[in-house]
Every structure is written in structure tokens, then in C-alpha cells.
Image (cartoon, rainbow, N blue to C red; front, side):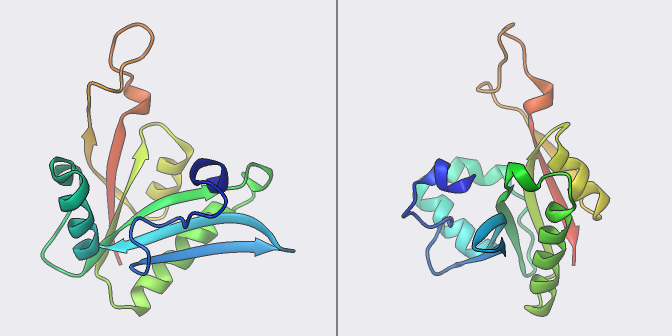
Length: 151
């Protein structure tokens, strides 16, 4: 879960105060989390941290943003909570008048299947030399896929 990846006291967002964080909670237990950042804030963050990586995002000239840190607690997977989180996020973004959103998922992953089923389309595959498997060949299954959806 995200707490293990980022530490108990760290927020789940790239830019504090600029990220929408949606959590599903049941009896004080986090079922899942999804985050969203406006493209303008994402661009500012990337310019300060890794400007070259901006080429891996689908930035358009209209109001949009990036979904990230999408996770569902292992105990709750396979029960539809991932779909619910994405749908809730999309409804929030629609109310905030966003026109589209994009995300990165691993190729051949459950996340890719979920986003595809909910209307996201594949824009491009991000091939990097850091994604080499034990046989010194590119690990196609773990390549990142950039997906977008109009809201």
C-alpha cells in the first residue's frame, strides 16, 4: 500500500496543496487511493525535478491532468473497488470542468484492463533502457503505457 512506499507521515501527492487525493475508507481502513494533478502543476513539478520526462505525458492545450498513485489494498482487490475509485475520480474531474485526463500503467496489467474498460485509450508506450528483464531484453509486459480519456 502507499504508506509502505512513501512512509507513514508523507502525503501521497507530488505537490502538496495542488493534488486531489481520493480515498475509499471502510471502518477506518483504507481500501484504495487515487491522486490527480492538474497539467500546469505537473509541468511546474517536472521542470524542477526531471524536465526530460515531460515527453512521457500527454499534455494538451485544454484543461487536463494526470492520474497517479492509483492503488487498492490487496485484501480488497477483485471486488470492483478499483473501478469505483476511477469512476469517482472521473466524476470529480467532470464537476471541476476538466476536459481530459491521462495516466501511466504497466503494459499487460490489471490497471491497464480497468482503464481500458472505462474508456481510456493507449497513446504511446514508454520504452526505457531501465526496463530490462533478467535475460537482458526489454520487458514488454512492464513497459509503461500512457493512456488518456476525454471527460
